[in-house]
Length: 147
Image (cartoon, rainbow, N blue to C red):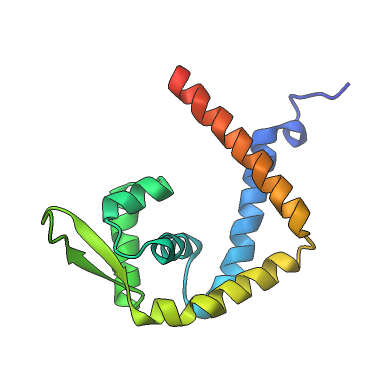
């Protein structure tokens, strides 16, 4: 019988360590572009729908304004995006990708794909992992709304 109180048998630690390894993988892949992993997540969200508000971005990434504001400022300085006040509601700030973000999208995607492929993760395995992690995520979210 397994001793579930040892570190190596803790699901939380395995997920934490796996996340850490993914952060390293993405950091290496994104380094040539001068983009951090959190900045890459911002790019992904804006590639899906350009012109989101800072509030929408924060909700999508589960990040607060204290984290987003300096990151957005750095991305703006590096030429990845621009901020504009909403024409509908001037209290809201919308984020728009600059041409650089669209020009580098294919290169960044190709580099990320190469890094993931180097881990020998087959497409079927990738899809199974995504499915299992989404189920786990959903259960954890459900638990939080019950308690």
